[in-house]
Amino acid sequence: MVRDTKLEQTKSDMPSRIKEFEEELAKTKYNKRTQGHIGIIKAKIAQLKEKQIQRKKGKGKTDGYTVKKSGDASVIIVGFPSVGKSTLLNKLTNAESQVAHYAFTTLTCIPGMLNYKHAKIQVLDVPGIVEGAASGRGRGREVLSVAVNSDLVMFVIDVFDPGHYKKLMKEVRAAYLRVNEEKPDVTIKNKSKGGISIGTTVKLTKIDNETIVKVLNQFRIMNADVLIRNDIDIDQLIDLIEGNKKYVKGLVVINKIDIATEEQIAKAVRETNADVCISAGTGKGLEELKEAIFQRLGFMRVYCKEQGKKADLNAPLIMIQGSTIGDMCDKLHRDFKKKFRYSRIWGSSKFPGQAIRKLDHEIKDEDIVELILD
Image (cartoon, rainbow, N blue to C red; front, side, top):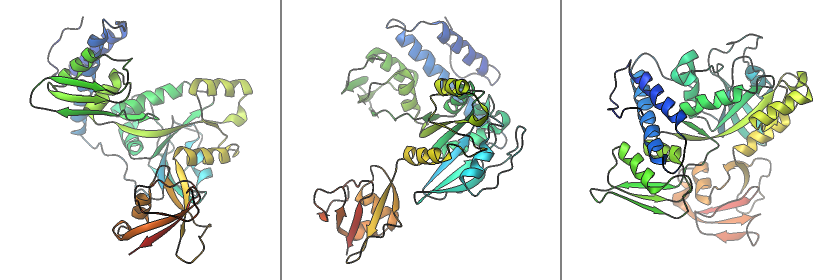
């Protein structure tokens, strides 16, 4: 067993302590008897890694690339060097990213704009990721800081190196990104006394109440009311306690299929669970990729209509699925919500032109909306 000592370690000792805990974790079989111990070890590893990151932030330049966000959403292209990211950016947008057949051609963050179905999507090409990127190797922290602030991370994988996918996912996870994961619906409210009180609305199959208490205590939460509405595991609980994770959408793209066999393509798709297969060089599959980007971002088109006039069906307002009338008001003008009286909706409403007086009414793709303001 790894001895239970204080987490306040010297800089030189911290990596060895993390390694010790990780080794113990690897050789501990998960079951009901060991679940609590595993929870404590994982919590200690998370605490030590956070201390490491905070110390590194205080030394040297660690800020990411300065990128001004524009358009309806931003997409970052992430991949190992020489997988064709720059070629892909140039094909998708009007950007001019340098392309060459050797590693590390891109040395800064290069933006381009993809126009698709009236949506303006900012696409960012950054230097290739290398193993150890989350720890700062190869300007990795700068690259991953851009990913944290993006709406979609597009992983580009060379069809001949599908193993890169797991390595990329390991790096982005170490950089506090949670790709294609929903943030669990869990509330933790601190209180002055009474210990830990746990309430659930679902059956927990991956973690028990005793383990939850042990993990919370490891983070010095001794008194709290916990309400859990999802079947979470230990890692998700730790993420929620730390509160520093970014949940982003992801898209996996296999590139260079023009020079690969069907067997090689099938193997790459199988190992990465790829969403789209393309050839950035020849343009094959790019239309499918554009549609996949549009859909994964959750976009929908809403048409605005002025009173007494026909709706302009050539210039839709791009909104996120699940948006409300209130969200639409906010996007059009900051004063519209204050002046809102009611709206009329054609498309998804039960009755064409039905008057809707609630700002929280959800709008649907290709709805026509008329706002009536004071």
